[in-house]
Length: 459
Image 1 (cartoon, rainbow, N blue to C red):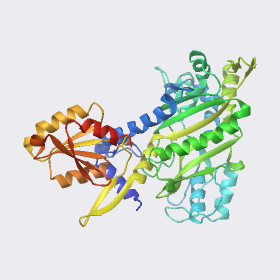
Image 2: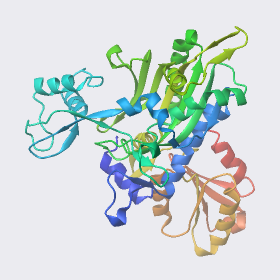
Image 3: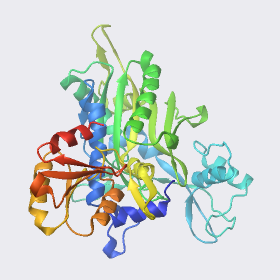
Image 4: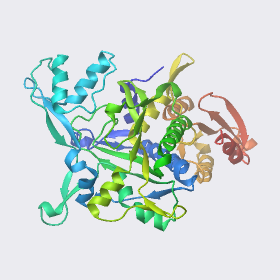
C-alpha cells in the first residue's frame, strides 16, 4: 500500500523528521528544518553514500569547497548568462508559473510522450496556445509573454554593494570540484580515471518550489565528478548507470518504484553526449531522483578559457596532455530522504488495529535500538544498557507509556530492534529483543546482546 503526501507530511512532523522553517513566525515559504529523527536519517544517508563511493573506492577523493566563489566561476560555467526559468503570469488571477512546468503537467495529465525541456520562449508559448492550456488556479487562458528569471541568489561581500562585490550562493556543488581539479590530482597523485566526491548545500531561487521537500530553494547534493579518458567515457557512463541504480536498491528503495529514463537527443545540453535520470514514483508522478550526465570536457575547457590556467591532465605513459571527459552522478539528499519515506512506509493490521511501519534498512534507521523498561524499577538497568550500546548504535531510552504503544511508536519511526528490560531480567540476566518487521521476540542474555545485535545488523 503506497503512502499519500498527507500521510508522509503528517508523520514527518508528528515524529520529528521535518518541521516547517520559522514556524512560530508563520513560516517562510518552502523552508524546512530537519528535526531529531530527520537529521539522523539524513546523516545516515550521507554516510552510506560516502562509504560506498569514497571510503570503499581508492580512486575517488573527497572535497568540501566553499559555498561562496569568485563570480567569474559562474560566468565561465554559463550560469550567469543561461541559468534561468521561463516565467509566465496569469493576467486574471495574477499567479505566476513556469511555462515549461505548465506544459509538462499537461503532457502528464494527457499521458503524452512529449518533452517540455529545451524549448525556447517562443516555442513554449506556441505549445501553450496549441493545446489551449488553462491557468491551473482560475481556469482562464489569459497569459502574459514569457520572461526569463535567473535562478541564482545574489549577495554582496564586504562593506560596499557594487559590481565588484557581487557574489552568488552556489546553485550546484559541481563547479567547486572543477576549479579544484588540478589541485586534487596533483596533491592526491590521482591517475585517470578518478573521481571527486562532495556533499554540500546548494541554492536555487525556484519560482515554483513544490511537493514538500522535493523541490526547494535550499537543498543538499551528493555529487561526483568522474574524470576519464575521452575514448572510454561512454563505457564509463554505462557502468555508472548500473552502479547508481544498484546503490538505490542497496539503500532500500523498492525496485518497482524506480526506473531509468534516458534523455532524447533534443533534451541534451549542447555539450552533453548522454544523460540518464533515475526517476521515482512519487504520488504526484515520476520525478527525477538521481541525474547522471556525460558532460564531456565542457566545464574544464570553459574554466581553462576564462581563467587562463592550463587545466589539462598529463598522461605520463602516453606523454601527452588532454582535457578529460566527465561523468557526473548527482543525487539530492532531500529528494532521496523523501523517496525513502515513501518506499519504506507500510501499513498492516495487528489485533484488529492499524500498525504503521517504516521499513528502513538497519543502518539507515534514525533510531537503531530502542531500550524499554516495563517498570520504574528497571530504569537504572535500562539506562546502563543504553549507555553501553550507544557506543555502536543510535539508541533511544523509552521508559514511559504502555509497552504496546511504545512498540508502535518505534515501528512508526523505523526502529529495527527494541530491547525490553522486564520483570525477569534481574533474575535470569536476559532481555527481550523484538524485531520491527516480523514482531518476533527472543530472549537474549545480557552478556550475549552485543554479539546478537552485531549479527542482526549484518543482515
